[in-house]
Image (cartoon, rainbow, N blue to C red):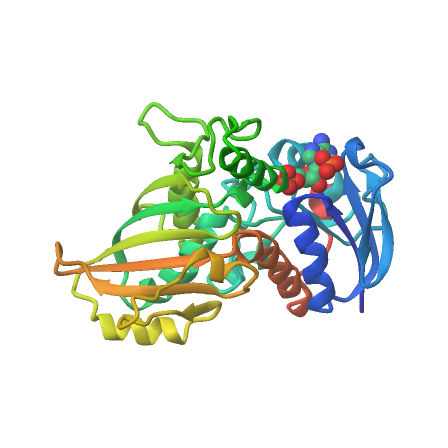
Length: 344
Ligand code: A2P
């Protein structure tokens, strides 16, 4: 059987990647609708060699749609997701709108696929940094539960969308030409610079992005009390995020054992050449499905500590690929069914 699919936010950085992945992974599509804002009225995007019109999302957009892949920001999802569910569609939502809603599964297929079975029309795709983190940490946590997780991120411009990537390029060009860099999307120049993530700060001094990592990791791992702290930083990389991860266990975790577990873990590629000082890099992770993990070492400050480093494509596994994998999971497990009770 094949499915009627809509992409909400089809013109964005994640939306265009969703189109590519649906085509390259041969997702069974009967009909594909591309939805965006009035800004994109009249645009066309190509899918499997065909030019498809981009439609402005309206009340009628979700009639006769089985599956919506939404990546148009939290306010757009809040506005349209319930309408899509009421029309009989299942929504896989890439925004933060529903991630911490207890009724909404938050799914990384390699980590907690079963959570998707209980959906009531909406399944949330976690924050990009959390997806990458969970792929590297879950296989170790399963073997020996983590006591505490400390992570620092090095996040690329792509996390702020296609226009942010353009802004970084324009800023770099301006600076190289001796001109002042212009910032519209970012609060400060990102080219040849970096700054702590500019999402809203709470009164404990944590920004939203950091709290997403804390709360979403706890939800995905089903460990509500896991001790997690994060520092998120935006760096002048176009695409692919990196993370420095420190894990504390209750007993020592042998580096060789961790390496062997991670070398067989799904969705991960081990990248380590200690002689050459060669480890995961965002430039090499860009465009790859696998999250690159390496630099696995004993924490010299703690007998039960492990250090890891990763780079992963934020737009692919950090967003679009994870969403398409959730869609594939729904199809193979026959979980792609309308939320009848919620729609009434
Ligand atoms: P548009 O291109 O018409 O603005 P990115 O994350 O790369 O910035 O992309 C965001 C995506 O979300 C784009 O496809 C954008 O469409 C879409 N979008 C943003 N706001 C809305 C809205 N209010 N209604 C529908 N789509 C929206």
